Image: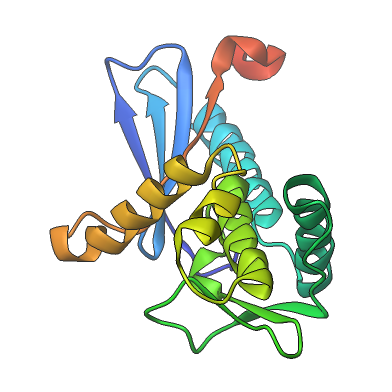
Length: 191
């Protein structure tokens, strides 16, 4: 996390057994029990920032990892019929989640997907893989896309994310980490 990153700690008298952290725009909010000492608060804030960063890092695969993932999805759900030549993140797609060029086997995913759950990224990858086989959105296309078990769930997630700016709901969906304070032995330190 950058040294100038904003962290807001919120203490709650109702919170007793858990600590949570999530991103809220350009700051990170950490929720801790009101009974924590300053030393406990400091340790748990550091721990939760590390966990949140690790989760976000897992959700940001590089282009090579995306390509490998696409090949795996093509084998698993499309019997290897689609073989992308390249798969990469792009910054210039603000209205689409992904695109492809069937002629050269190139798939591009909007960087807006970076950080979303892997099953959502997998859905967009599979959608574009099917376009390498079927360029239109006819019934045969959707039958192939629905081979992915979380297709409907992922479509709903993306529709919700697309609607969120209009609802002023924020963009940091599904990025909360939580930990049970009883699961860590050094919490008893009451300095």
